[in-house]
Amino acid sequence: MHPSCCAMSAIYLLGKLSIFSPLVHCMVAEQLNSSSWRHKVIACKILPTLHGTINKDVTNKLMDLMWNDWHEDVRKSAAQCLGKTSHGREVHDDLRERIVKGNEATRLEAISKIGQLGIMTAKLLPVFLKCFEDEYISVRSEVCITCGNLEIKDEQVINKLIHLATYDPIWKVKALAIQAMGRTGVVNEEITETLLWAVRYEENEGVRAEACHTLMMLKLKTEEVAEVLQERFLVESKSVVRDEIASTLEMFGISATEDMDMVAQIKNEVRKLCTKGNIATQITINEADEQKHENLSRMIYENEKELKHRNPYSVIKLKSMESKESRCHFSFSFSSLSYSRMSRRSKESEEELPPMMERIRSMSQASDHSDTHQKKMAVVERVHTPHQRAVSPAPSRGCVHPPRGRGTPSDPVQRRHPK
Image (tube, rainbow, N blue to C red; front, top):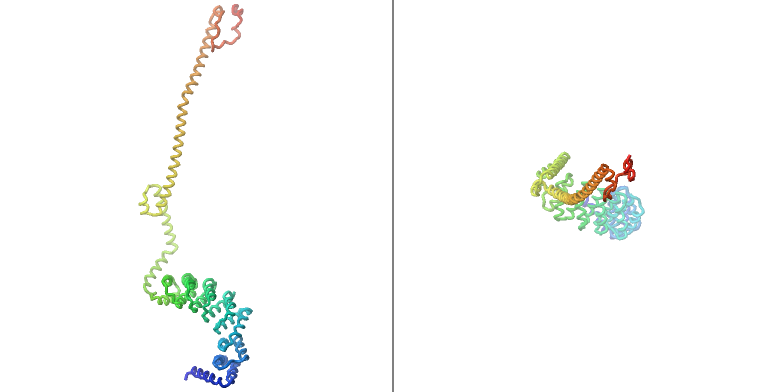
């Protein structure tokens, strides 16, 4: 007979005997003090199967083993035994006090015990939610593991998991939060968006792989999910993530291995085109082409159809140049109009000037003619004899008398008796 079958039979028989005698409880409780950790684990498994309740001394011993035993299996078995023997209230009060007042190791152990007990109470939940914002990475990670083990579907817990999966700086915490969301089995729009964002943009391959696995666990069969997985499969370089994506696409009935040669060739061509040399060469060619079209549009008038056939961007440049030319033509026409007006005014002033000049010239000629006439009269008077000048006529208007001086006396005595 198999040893496991023998152990199960012995546990069953001890349970039957405990109905008739309380000595079975004492015999099993003595094994809790054994030096062998295996004996302690077996005693913790037998106590919940016995009839009746365990006394306070056994409860205290189990609580001591749960917190202080050196072996992990013993601590876990003791916590489970307390939960199954209806002593969860005392345990939860102790857990709450340790989470609130304990250090990092104590909080970590208390959160682990909550998962092992498998019970979450309303009194313990507020303290448990604060652990999602703990400063230690180990505490946040253990909270996510406990949520997955207990499959807590509370809305507050789900929101905390979404926040950790999106904003936590540690990739391990993100992966554990995503794993806990998959174990809870809750499906809503926020969880779907969080998982798709992780598949697309997360830098660490562990987070991307866990997000793909969670999509498969939640059975999110939508067109958006299939499209995102296919797009990511084409550019994914990590084998772990590629395997998870392939297994998730099989859920949609899509084979991820088809046309892989063609996809590989396309990826190689894209990588070649994205080299620095090719990009710099293409930029230089585009700049030279633009400069050529600019010079061509300045020298030769082309219609829009030809420009569209050659380069559609030159049409926009041509329109801008035409608008500039129309502005220049308007300014030139305005300046030419003002210049024509000024020339007309100058011509009119020139046409008005000759009559004035003629008047001035005629007046100057008249004055010159009068001056010459007066000079001639003076010469004639000098030539005349004195008897002829005895009675001189009155000077006419406009004539000028000769100046009085030596040799031209005006006195009549001097005229009669010249020297």
